[in-house]
Length: 141
Image (cartoon, rainbow, N blue to C red; front, side, top):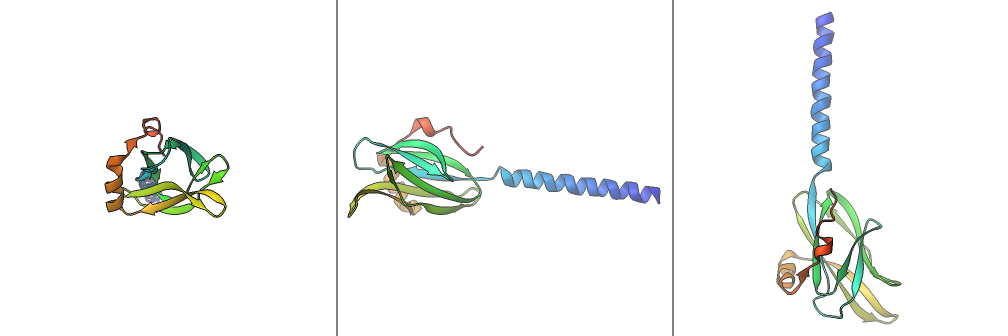
């Protein structure tokens, strides 16, 4: 009977250890979010915000890539008292997402728009933008 309980404890320990390894791998899983500034416009900086945290100050005609943890995130941008619409994105492991920010005139004045764009459109815009180096090392890990 004693040997049975010893084997049971060993089996449970192995199972718990393997579960914790699989959870650790899931926690470190990321996807890439490309934040694209307006390819036209003035040399202004906008604050990129994800999940209520400031990620980077993004200049017009620039972009940066963020390694985001898998899961649902809320993204917005602001400049002074003007805040963009907030968009939700569900990041999947090893996938890429493209968010473009631009400003436009509206009835209430100027507004900032955050919009998810398809990869083929993003790849046409990216060559006209410079990478925002100051944001390059900030990521989820």
